[in-house]
Image (cartoon, rainbow, N blue to C red; front, side):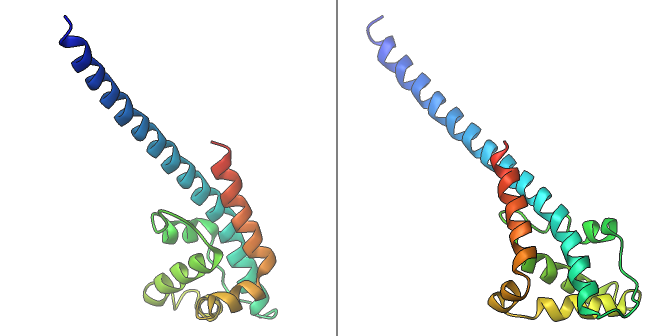
Amino acid sequence: MGAIAPWWGLVCGTGYAGWSHYVATTVAEAATNAGIKAGLKVGLVKVTEIAKLSLHGTVAKIPAIEVLQKITAGEFTDGLSLHGIFKCISSYMRNQLDETYELFSLAVDNMAQRTLSQFNKLNSISVAAVDTAFANAQTRL
């Protein structure tokens, strides 16, 4: 019996450590996913608002949020930024939706090509809204 107790302690301790690591990793991943989902929800609205403003009143066909959601689905796995959303949409539209949403595509592409610091300076309120949505959703889990 004396030889079994130390061995059993080692097995249980190793199992507990592995389980604890799994739970922590799963919770962190769930928090990140919740943050990405919330950030995208706010971010896609901000993309359409910024694109409309940059068109200076020009009437242009704007894709529905559902279309933009399909474009960005699965593209963000560990973090999210408004600039990153613009780059993702710009890259996709260049190949797929240029003709249908030509002016919107140009507006998005123009924003996506700016440096991160230029983009953040021009869109600081919208950037903060996306960052806040991302952070708040992560802390709710």
